[in-house]
Structures are given as C-alpha cells and as structure tokens.
Amino acid sequence: TLLIMFNVQGVILLFPDERPVFLREHAGNMYSATIYFFAKLLSEIPLLLINGTLYTCILYWAVGLNDSDIGKFFLFWGYSLLLMWAAMGMGFAGGVLVSDKNVAVGMIPVIIIPLMLLSGFFVDQDNILPVLTPFEYISLFKWSLQVYVYNEYTDLYLS
Image 1: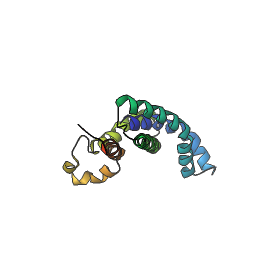
Image 2: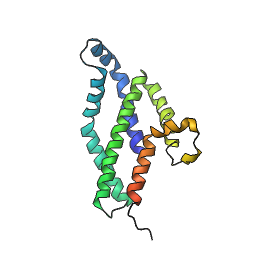
Image 3: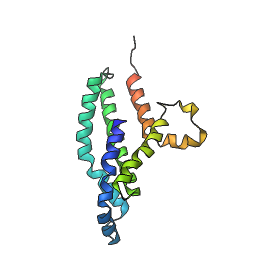
C-alpha cells in the first residue's frame, strides 16, 4: 500500500504544473503525448532504483521476511520496483485527467481505495459483486498481494 500510495501521490502533482508547457510544445508538434509519457516514466528510473532499493532492503530484513533463499529477496526487490513504476504510471495518468492540484489530491482516494478494497485483502474475492470484477483485475494491490504472499510462504516451514 505504501509503495503505491507514495508513488501515485508523488507524481500525480507534477503534471498539473507541467500542463501549460506540455500543451504549448505539443501544439508546436515538438513531440507526441506518448513520447512525453514514456520519457517521464524513463526519467524516474534512477530515483525509483534508489528509493526502491533502500525501501526494500530496510523493510525486508527489518520485518524478518523469509530469508531461506536469497532469491526470495531479489523477487521481493524486483517486484517492488515494478510495482513502484506501475504506480508512477498510474499517477501520471491520473495527473493528466485534472488541471488543478487540489482536485488531483482529492481524486487519489477515490481511485485508490476501491482498488484496495477489491484486492482480496479486506474483502473475500468471492463476495465481490460481479459488476465490480473487472476493477479487481486492474488493481495493483491484488497482484502485489498475490506475489508477496506467494513469495513469502512458498517453501516456508511453519512450526
């Protein structure tokens, strides 16, 4: 949850400030929206690597997660980086929808909380209304929960 919320909130506030510059340069045919989006995502990789590595190294060993195999740590680290990057993309997409920072900040819980509730951690996935099932599959929380639980409890001896 922290990985997603931190990264969505960190980038959703960037685009409303950059919108006038982007619109002017896009109108001048300097670049397309797709190129701009991917350039923004790629430019965040160094910060993502630093923050993600620090976060996962501290969290993994401090919490005492499964250390039976070093591969489990690297899976945790790699998936955490991918999750942070996906959350950044989601934040950029959310920032494009609004032009005011206050609206962007208010929009975060409206988007994130339903996805969090549909992840299967708070509500059993068998009890979700059928009309909400498609939202279950776009939830970053659902997939991260499944990967982290599988990584932690596979080959773990519980006494």
